[in-house]
Length: 286
Image (cartoon, rainbow, N blue to C red):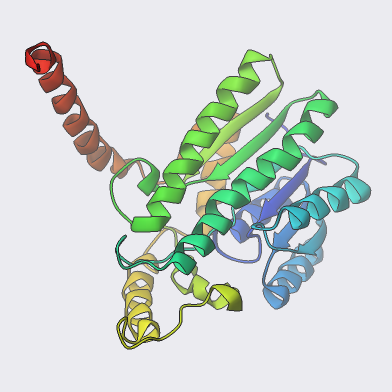
């Protein structure tokens, strides 16, 4: 896709961070924009500011972890603009607990937003795009942790997004669809994801117990450390420019920080060493 003028973009997690950067670039490209987010005030602020630039935009208050909300997002988009050309499944949250320390509520919350949010977007919007029978893009925001080791539940979800995107791309090619798929791997971008607990549903909040200690105090310390690091990251508007460059060049992996190559090579080298070992010794196992 080369020309984005008057194309329709749907962006989840659009009120801040990477999503807001993508929305800003969509406006620069002359697109019609559907902003979707769970935070009402920042969402309305983003809608108002984009309209002041002359962009055609609407906002939808919704939760990507709920299938019915994603269905409403799709219906609103079609009713307002008649089609969808770019879908950015971007909404994401994170925790930094160790795997064994993460609560079931942690798992439900992060899986619900990060992974099920993308699943819902793909499930609802892909059939719409197939019926349109024209060039479209589905862009799923993953993370460097989709390629390297670490980051607990967050990393699990992001590697799941990468696998989902790879499978979706292959299957769409098999039916000769005009829909393209890309996975966004931003690297460190200056966002507010370390404070994503501000949007955590009350029913999935962690409770204080004698055995677990004060989880809220521990999480606050982790959030502060993470935010200090993230605040040094790339500007979201600049990453959005990288994303649109990647779309124009029809890239599947859109990489914000090529320096991740070193860590990726380290992980792959370990896998290859183990493959080589079993290739040599598997016949000896009785």
